[in-house]
Length: 97
Image (cartoon, rainbow, N blue to C red):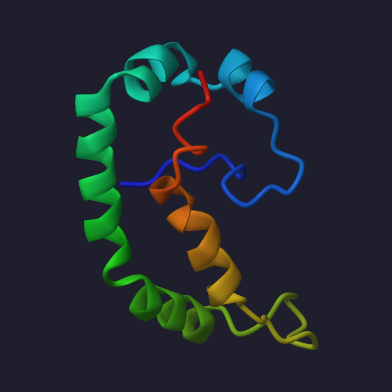
């Protein structure tokens, strides 16, 4: 299950604003300060990303166009997306408290 709300890949993402307004904002302290929770989420992310390239390829095949007129091809930069999703492996990612 993924709940993104269009922010996972937002280059203007701001942590404070996100946690102030997001439905899961109240979980911030529990998730980002508890080492057991962090370890659990890291294992879950690693498992989820194991099939990332397959999912990216499927998305590229299922959504070949950016527009309804089918004049602009959709190009998925899966390397950039994968790099963003892998930020969970850095300590900086878990310092959102």
